[in-house]
Image (cartoon, rainbow, N blue to C red):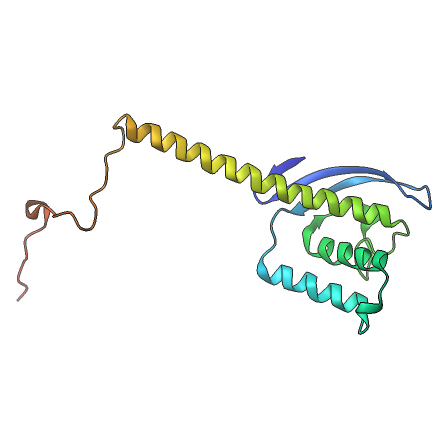
Length: 157
């Protein structure tokens, strides 16, 4: 998996459970969704299930969830994924949808872990520099300020 800014790129090679068709290609997905993207995915999920969503079978709910999430997450897709109605919606093998969603969620988890590690490394470097006195402590707001450092007041006529 390759990360670029807030996106991840991965390649899949999946055999459809029912059709036995081979699905190979590269996806680029968003590692994080904005609140509006999450809301759009949730709305699409409910739209796909219809007015009696509580009657939907579990596997249909999983498919609707996968499609609604991937519609918001996928930025670049292989040709087999493209569809005018909803990308991936025409694929007859649900294992393909679910495996692509798993990869997108894995990308999100790895991205979050990577960012946490980067933050921890920056904190450690900063702590070491402070301990070596390479960075001077900034005065606190409550500490008195040396009046000699302030500019003199000038009257303007």
